Image 1 (cartoon, helix red, strand yellow):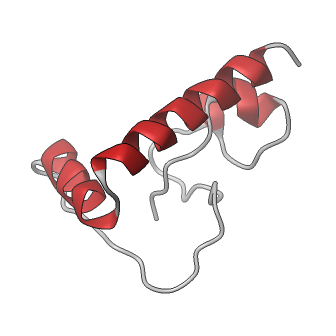
Image 2 (cartoon, helix red, strand yellow):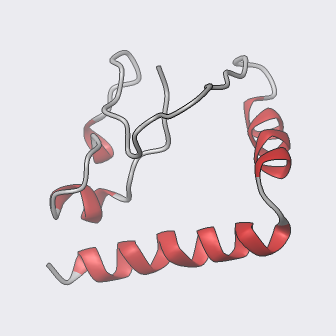
Length: 80
């Protein structure tokens, strides 16, 4: 099971995830509760498959808002 986790500073501040302690062999605690269906991508072309999946799930504007929000979470978590 792989899920995008929160920035390590946000994990240290209490959001779910393993941060930098993930060894690549264990399942991670989900950063966001899973509702509905899930998706999986293979090991080869992982980044391309992940970006294609993102493109199907939300618009460019939503992606920009997502990226800004995640950056802001990381910045704010660093101060905790």
